[in-house]
Image (cartoon, rainbow, N blue to C red; front, side):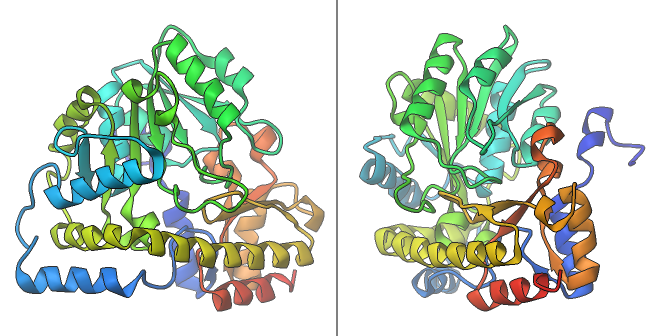
Length: 384
């Protein structure tokens, strides 16, 4: 424990992702844990970043809310794919990754003791940033099969509930929320006057027949929703840390106030590179989806052959498995054992949950890796 750290952040001192990736590096293990690709994104986008650096575009501070051309492309993207029409001048902000957009949004809307509702299991930063804001995280357990449980969500709402923090396609389970599920959430948000922060970092990584539906497209939801996107996930450049948020002007104005006091600005050349990326977006998104789809099937078949068939994900680049068929009652015990024993790293779902009765025996695997990396990991796991 870090003695100087404020008490409310003590539960969030460690990140399971950082811990397991560090362990993978130390042991030379195959990292099927942390969700980052092990190869670069499209060459046309890489070359655009290099050219931006050479030409001097973005080497100094970019505009505070993001390069105007990138905000214009984000607005066009929202209109093209979802028929949303944000004004790029007032209703879009560029951030240091989707993570900063989430942090800025929570800090903008959550005051001390306000409640933030989120489905459990969750991305680990959600309760951490809620604590940073002085709020209270309310993890709502997903139903068996890891679908959103609308009855549990309704029961969790109190007069202190302020924000509904959604994530679809969902990390860590790979679940993509259906139209009916989203309509149920929207009805609750309207009824209880909740602000919705919708983390849609994996929006272009869905596998048929699933399709991504932004909750902001539903009746009554545009005016209460901040929609968050990720250049790292959409274009496969996670190290560049360029994200964005869009939504109604009053909400985005609040997010901008907070965000300017975090990183202020970042990633100038990379913002210009994503301008080019968006201009090739349809092809890039389709190519990435196809490659991840093949890698998903490769991993899922291999895990089934080993004896731990996964819940086949509808989206993201994660799949989860129940490890009890291999004789383990605990996913954490399994993940602690396999790095040393077979040289593979994965993430226990219990590290992303406050409901161990549901998450305890499950493990999350990342298939955002080259086929040969996945095959190497599966070959090692077969020794179990």
